[in-house]
Length: 452
Image (cartoon, rainbow, N blue to C red; front, side, top):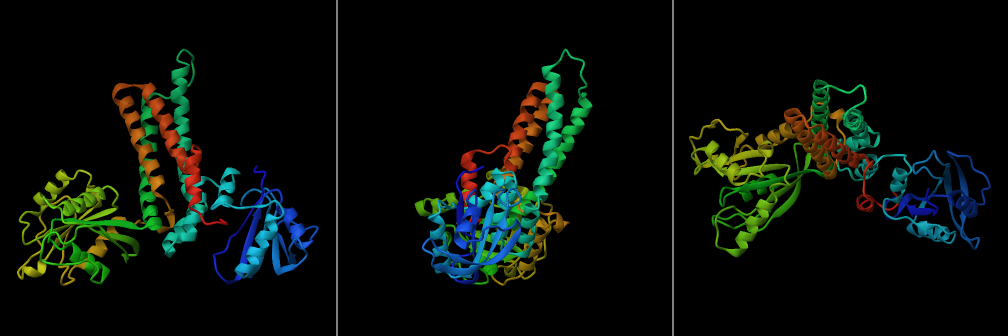
């Protein structure tokens, strides 16, 4: 347990009806007694009291609350002063507490102590920040489910199965001469496949949770003059990007935030991709292609007047830019208004194709429906908030586990399976904080609000 006691204002900056100062640590109850002269206050109770500084001057009349260790958020003694929400009053109270050998808390330090004292795991601690910053009802509800342990329970279930498999695999390696009960090959295969299926299911839900938490990152790609900027403006419902008949008008990345199909979205317009001798245009193209891997969805815009075979053109793009994920690709056939007799030519293609006119704003509702279908989940009540690092850890775990299973299934290499199980265990444990570096912890909690 930490020896020092911390304090911070845990309500938003500015004036308000109520402002709360939170104190956590060994001196919490002492601070209550010194500031209010209350000699005894039962845990989980509150009392109206007059607050005074070290000179006896009245600071405020406030409601004080006490939560005794270990039954508190941080697992330490906690005192809260619910004052009138004047910044002057709250600052005066903080200065008084500092005189009592209590230091100001770092950003996220209360949640960090809750994690270090075993009150919550790392995924739940992150959910605190996600709940506070949630921008819509679905995101708030998902963050709350993560805080309640839905995400952590799924991870722990997989960890338990993985640990159980490790026990038998390593026992077979460490005690080959002993007559111990070990799993046969069929059982190892079955348990491995079950774990992989569970990992992929959680990864799919985590991807949706990441979208709710951070929003969708949609990248608009295409050659010059196919209507990328016109589509950008149509979706934004304003002339945000410059549109001309001259190729190469857009030479930099243009990003705006909108809402499509109920999802918060960062929409990115990019330079037209083509061979160019212009140094500035080349840099814009480089930046556009660099963003491909980071995108949650890619709008590949094609001009149907110049694209004679959509499936062939799509395959050329996929071959030239292998980082484009087909599952994240939505092909936009633009400029149908220039073909009066146009019919929706649904030729066979491996990815969805939507025909629109960005200029006339025809077919935009089809884009919205496609986004909804691509990222919806059947059961919204089972979703949980997730972050990019969670997706990276889950993806890494799946990759390691599948590699180990492949070598065991094809070559019977139990040693490699054991090592990969160990690595998968550590990768998955990064999510809940079972295996986490101090550097990562510092980065995570530094992004929290002070007082949280």
